[in-house]
Image 1: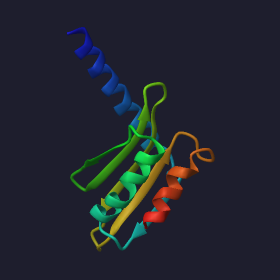
Image 2: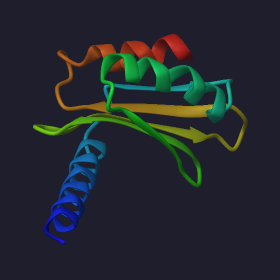
Image 3: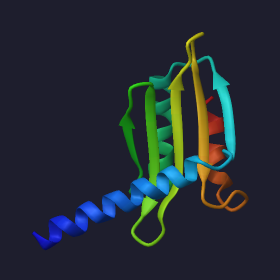
Length: 111
């Protein structure tokens, strides 16, 4: 029971940290003519290379990829949203803008 409580609290904390990142200005934001699934298929493996604990989950509007660790929580988040006019909109958020440019660089390479 104690382990379950700790896991729930840790998951809640990462969720809060993710929301905190997303409330900031993105380090990279762009529109792509590729659909959300194509961007996710390209970007998710690149983020796993950068941080093996990265996860990609489908959302109602596209995909969310999160890179986190046990010490700092969420390090970077990207939202890939299907655009109504076709293609997708990609926004990347990171803890430290200059230091974490590799997250934005990975996203740019998939556009």
